Amino acid sequence: MIRSILPFLVFAWAISSCKPYHKEVDKLDIAKEYYEALDQSNIFRIQDLITDTLLTRENESGYEQMFSNNEYVEWIRWDSVFRPSYKILEIIEEDEFIRVTVSKMDTRISFLHNEPIVTEQMLRFDTDRISSVETTEYLTFNDSLFVSNRDRFLKWIDDNHPNLNGFIYDQTKDGGLKYLNAIRLYNMQN
Image (cartoon, rainbow, N blue to C red; front, top):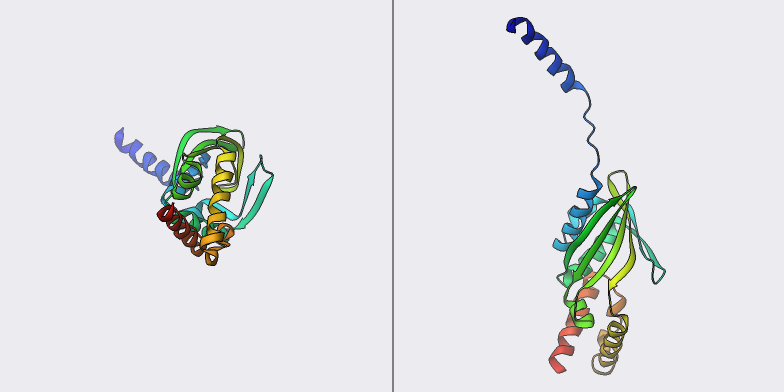
């Protein structure tokens, strides 16, 4: 009996192994990997997780920017200068997108805001890659404190180190290094 079933089982296994394997895309895992890659400033991993162009949007301010893959990598290099810490506080899959509550803290945020910024974000996908990151709400963000600290800081830079002007809008690694240096100089003299 076993001898007659064995060839059938081998044949069935051989046929089933020839069928193409289609793994279901797990958007929740991709979203988790994305924030882990941001936390580690892992440029190579991020490039694999996003589409050729990535739309970022902030609903409260109406700000929107389309990044090419290379431009987003440059932004990650800028972000990495401040040694960011991204923490997922909540993550939920909803229909065609992932909703994430995320906390971010880094040297720049600590300097200007004194505590992590917590946002709710919505990630949209094009098949198995993230195509947009939309900040739908700021849950913890003291805008008046942030702006007041930034304005005081920039005024001090204007008065004491005008050669550093412009770093605040330069979201390249060099711009980030100038920003970090400006924070260091400010902290040394205040």
